[in-house]
Length: 509
Image 1: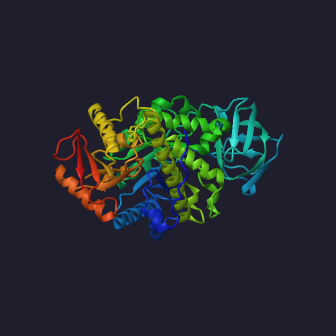
Image 2: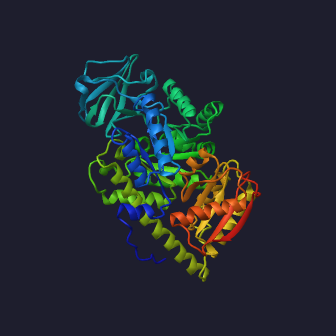
Image 3: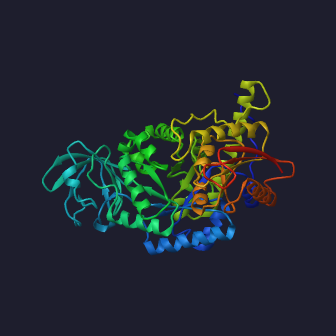
């Protein structure tokens, strides 16, 4: 297949803002970005969902940040999602003498019981049962995997380790135990408190860290539902056990995050690219939105330009089928939060243009005709399971309507959906015709902000089909998304409005 010549992508803020970018951007709020003016700048730059990292800051601070996000969302007239990220059972070192210790290759050190140590070769951790659950031969990784240890001896109150790969470790840095089966609960007392706050505050997504089994996902779902929350649960894949139970975890979750930081320590880092592809592929098969996270544009914490490897990493995640890419330290503590968001948006735009053009050319050549039905998702695996709440008839209507939209060169594909599941089914097909997700439910609109290619648009409550079409036309003409004579294809989803569901309609502006 011959790849079309690349187009120049817009670089100015105004031109970039006007472009249709389908891949969603999740940005982490931190000291560099929590002020209201900074949040507004990130939204203008292209952020769709904000992540609140509960491992840092107080509930009061996060509540204030969430309120700022809601105010900015109302001001710009665009639904913005909020993802509350629970810290989970992250094991950390305690305080080290002098704040840091150099681990010399070939030397030995011990993990001991207790909460403090004044000896540089005796470490304590935040996980009291560690001494009991480690065994001779186990691997211990420190400082995001840069330091590697092997357990050589175990006693009643300490385990002795040899340093295989040395380096400097600092107080409170993370401890990873690849392959070690731990008894730690999926949610700590602090996680429960944070989840209850997320439910009460109206968060749109809640992510569970260090997931090991589908039962843990189900428990968090039940906690949120019993508190009256409509939040979607995001399972973070960052443990070896999660890879072993991948299909069951993805089936239980509402969305998935490929958390490459800890996952790249838990498994062989050389296998990380193919594991990422597998996770995304399974999410496609189960129709679950998937976020790729960690070190996507990491160098831009300090630099104004990413490395070539980073831009390729973002592009490959999009080509693999990721719905969203996430920024962590880049926007939380970085020096150029808005610039990094705009850069990610530019990369996404360039990648999507090439992807869609290449796919159309390939299908045109394959089918030997000018119209190829390029909305049907031939480059991605077909789903094995329908997303929860989606009727198979609705899926069939979405698929058929997608082909019609491509054949008629429609300008917009409009999905009316009360819960958002019909929008998910359209999103996971990677349709080339831009999608507008209509709903009169504010939670659904904010959740649609995560779905690839879907622009959330508030609809009048109880509107019939004609009123919905008039509403979309007015919005599209005002925003420059529609012109007179353009065609719109509308799919009315299950349980929405009075115009009937499971229906496709073509409308000319």
